[in-house]
Length: 340
Ligand code: NAD
Ligand code: TDX
Image 1 (cartoon, rainbow, N blue to C red):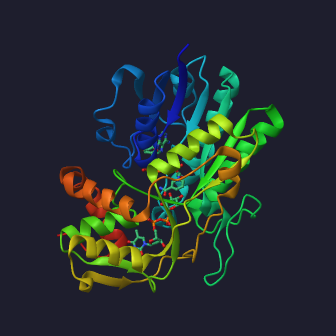
Image 2 (cartoon, rainbow, N blue to C red):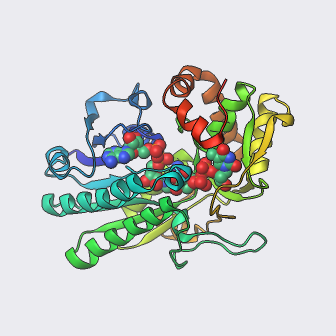
């Protein structure tokens, strides 16, 4: 019997990579991909996939009736990727973050219960655990307290709590994954790496926040997706799993690597006002996922960054279509300067 899974947010960056990976590697799995197509959702992210095993439904995860209509009766799992995902936007206005990330998660949990879905996988983030000291060997583990610092992170932490409550109160079978910063093809160019690639390609200034020494722990998007699948298949009910590939980098080093790979001058770097409440360092200890799920990231930073840059160079229309739309207003508002 083919397995049916319900993926939310599958037209976004990570969700679409997950859909591709599952269609490629799990020939007996059928996917219902439910996505509201917000500014971050893009049908082009799904071009070329196997339509026979993939059904796309446009809908909001906060819309109870629409979720129940789209969710198959015999679904094996819900994978909840749908979210407002950009920290800077949440600093500007938090409302949509609380609505989608918290209420939406609750609606999906209720629907899972009503339709008897076997397992609920919540795609969370390392940011729920706050920030780590700069010069230390401290890491985020599954025992780290939830101490979110941005409205985005607070909404994702709250989502984890509603997931926990659904399990404790109603016995929903849940698993949570907490991953670090993803990079790879099809990431919306509001995020660090694709923004810097696009600006460098266009010889525009590269806006680095603060002193540029904030540290992020980068993982290639397909490795994250493999970890989510492993948590679904082998994770223990009620558990959280940290996913990371031990790849800490200062922002300034990431930015100079991009400039070097593109043969562009470092003089394009422009230090700008720091992000409010800017978390200093993220670093993930993925030992539990490695030991219990057999999680093994496959992509090296060097190869992953090269593959990502190549994808953006080979898909300039994808980027320019975004950069010529509403994104221009966002950029002007956020950075106080216009794109060329
Ligand atoms: P994204 O912003 O690229 O995509 C989000 C998708 O969700 C879009 O397709 C959008 O249309 C959809 N969506 C938004 N609101 C919706 C709603 N109300 N109903 C239905 N669909 C809606 O985000 P991403 O980077 O792909 O992140 C996916 C998930 O992974 C998020 O839950 C995020 O918190 C988590 N995560 C992201 C990272 C990262 O580095 N990007 C790291 C760890 C965890
Ligand atoms: O223009 C910029 N300049 C800059 O210096 C941007 C967009 C970012 N930065 C810095 C801020 C961060 O220290 O780069 C770092 C990475 O920024 P983002 O790409 O915005 O990611 P971050 O805030 O770390 O959050 C990401 O990782 C965890 C994702 O956006 C989240 O969805 C995920 O949960």
